[in-house]
Image 1 (cartoon, one colour):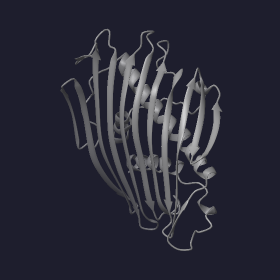
Image 2 (image 1 turned 180 degrees about the horizontal axis):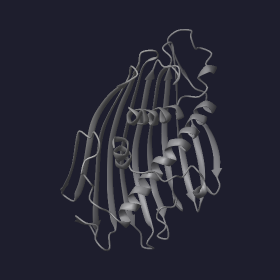
Image 3 (image 1 turned 90 degrees about the vertical axis):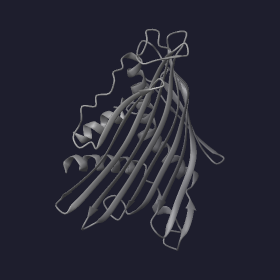
Image 4 (image 1 turned 30 degrees about the vertical axis):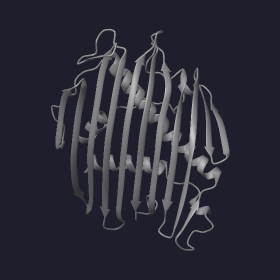
Length: 302
């Protein structure tokens, strides 16, 4: 039970990090079935918070995982972990494919927790346009795709039911530059949903979606694991919260420009813009190394 509670707690933490702020200030709340757009300030605050807590980490994880595989890659270990239902590895047409899926249900003290995981990872190595099964000496391009879906539920006789859904799709390319720098271009979509009657989590329905595009994100050969020295990240974010009688929504875009250790952020909501500079960003808590989805999944299932 502790294993599933741990997985569920991680998902809850992610969801609460992006829960809509300022909902209590809605003048129309409780007056009927209404939909209200958050103010520009509320939306910008929500975008900034989710960007700092999830957006930076997701890009850091993708970049960190790709650069580690560039330096040293091994075929996935499929020796079996915990309660994994299905796990396999295949190699076709230049693509290494790893798959894992499982469903677990446990009950303790009357509380039933269920988690379902479905993960696919693909990676391909090439040099001068030719694909190789193993990374060749002179590797100049790495392509990686990740598709993960997680659903979880907790049924508590006292507080009711909480349901969570998470999905992420990542498509990243890492290429060697003439000066031996590595440059990453990536697209990512990420979604979280939460519906709960448990007051501990905030009753209601939450939905959070973002799409990310990194453009020419460059890291140096001296330390491939540090944050980029240049490049741009663009995040498009939408959030929604409903308490059954009213709904609040908001959306906007954040553009992040890396400049030798600093990051300039511009959040755009409608015609309004909010700017901020993250000085010495590379040494901040925002840019953190993260383990791959596969490693996190296996650690949870052991």
